[in-house]
Each structure stands twice: as C-alpha cells, then as structure tokens.
Image (tube, rainbow, N blue to C red; front, side, top):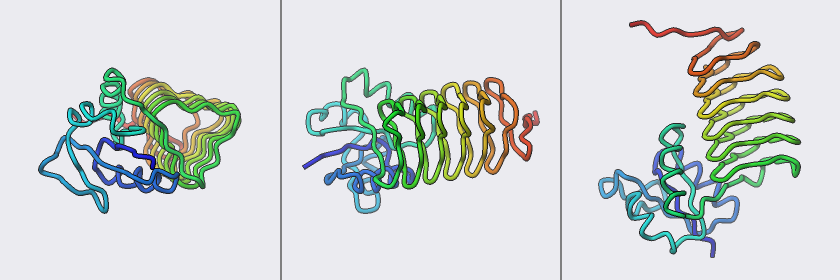
Length: 209
C-alpha cells in the first residue's frame, strides 16, 4: 500500500488527491491548519494540522502540498523539507512528460498536461490540466501554469510565477519573479519581476491607489 499525505484540504487539494489516486497512491490522507474545524475533504479525511503531519512523518510514503497559492505553497513545502519529510511529485497517468525533461520535487502534473523535451520544471510547481510546457522551457520554483495555458519553446520564468488559464506565452519570452499573467492573455514580450499583465497582446495592469 502506498500512503500519501496531502497538506491543504482545499478544492485544489481535491484535484491533487484525485490525481494521486489515478497515479497509484491507494491511501490518501489530508492535513490542514483549519483542522479540527475541517475534518473531511470529499471522500478523504482531514486528520490534523501541519504540526501533526511533521510529527507523523514516518507514517507516510510521501508528502505533497495541495495548495494553489504559490507563496503559501512555497512556505509550507520549505517547512516540510526542513523537517525532512519525503516530498514527492505526482503525475497523472494521462500527462505526457518527456524522458528528457527535468521535474523538481513536490511538482503536480494534472491530466492531459504536456512537458516536452529538455524542459525544466522547478520544485513545488503546478502544471495544471491540459497545460503545455514546450521544449527547452525553464520554469522556476513554486510556479503555477493554469489549465490549458501554453508556454512555447524556450520560455523561462523566475519563481512563483502564475500563468492564468488559457494564456499563451510566445517562444523565448522571460517572465520575472512573481509575475502574474491574466487568463486568456497572449504574452509577446518579456515581463519584469512583480508585474501583472493581461490582454491580447498582454500589457501591464497597474493598481489603482
């Protein structure tokens, strides 16, 4: 029996659990810091908090963080790594991952996603349903490529980048640290660190103070 602990009992966590079951993890248990107020997530029990998971580390074959928010996921995965838990990646069996790609620890690749030859995906990143990471892309740690987003060949990103659902990024573009790309956008130029862009073609969105 393969026993997996998922930290984060959100809706995103449910999809991580479903992906894990499809990938052969036959015993899935959730931990969430909302426990004991939250004790159930669909068909999976929530049995404790982050601290409980760390204290029970020997009870599981692997651990993955099931939280969609990039910065929160980064904090929690690093905390688990310091505590020396076995951080694993989870790949849906319908995902296509090149044998020449490199995928870091704690990555989740959902159904029908594609990671092509010589792409690199950093630790704790999410390649969501139907997303495409083309050849020679380099995705930083704790990024999220949302459903049906497409990164063309040679795209590179910093850490904690979020590419929205259905967005497309032109080949060889660089997205800086903590960039957000709005859903359905088409990115034709490099985007500097911390910027949010949206539209076709994508342009910067500035906050209204």
